[in-house]
Image 1 (cartoon, rainbow, N blue to C red):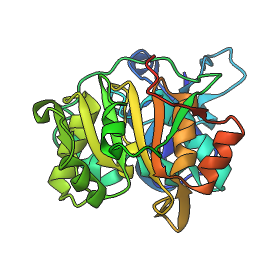
Image 2 (spheres, rainbow, N blue to C red):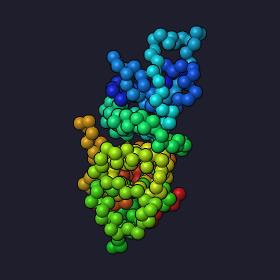
Image 3 (cartoon, one colour):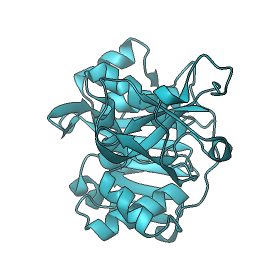
Image 4 (cartoon, rainbow, N blue to C red):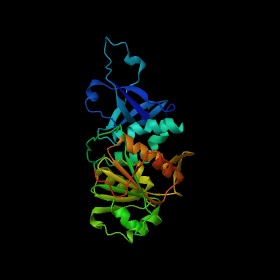
Length: 293
């Protein structure tokens, strides 16, 4: 069988590389799994992005002599969700950035080595949910009321919700005003040690808490176990710089709405010009009150 992968060490524009998988391994490999492949003159980690229906045999027009085989399957547990895999190529093409750079936004090679060292024991197998929404819906709420902004945020919180704040200062201010139950809430600040980064990855991947409060960084995590993202927007904190390229958070948010099952809500008292334009062009749906799906 043939599979398509993105090696961590390099890629050709926004394209994948093709490798051969032996019959005894073909049944256990999945999209989002991690494999080891010969790449250039060494071995490298690679993320499986697609499984081909093409099987190589004696009667096939494709010869296995012309396609290199993977060395091993490192884990059969998918580390990335299908929606993340689909968005890698989309974002790569949109920003004209190599696909392996976008892959590294979602999961770093340092984290991979840590997970392999722990034998991936802390990861629970996640179930796939609906992807590729043909009518992506993003609800937008422009908060202009005299009532508390934090109360408006609380009204958008339902079961299995991710709260995304601009920075740690906004999180601290929210924590002083909210009435959330802290025993079911995970609060993560951006200043993390490597150990805490690994623990945060496990917590988000396994869905250990019903509600997660974090900054924009969580948008790059596997959110398959959650149902809703509430994004707190301001007109200042709009982009992130990685690998000498600037990525817009709202671009990533729109891909979340399109490729994932997640319901996206944006709440803002200081919206950007871009958000107001998208609201008036019907890319966003105006939400006068929380919309419960």
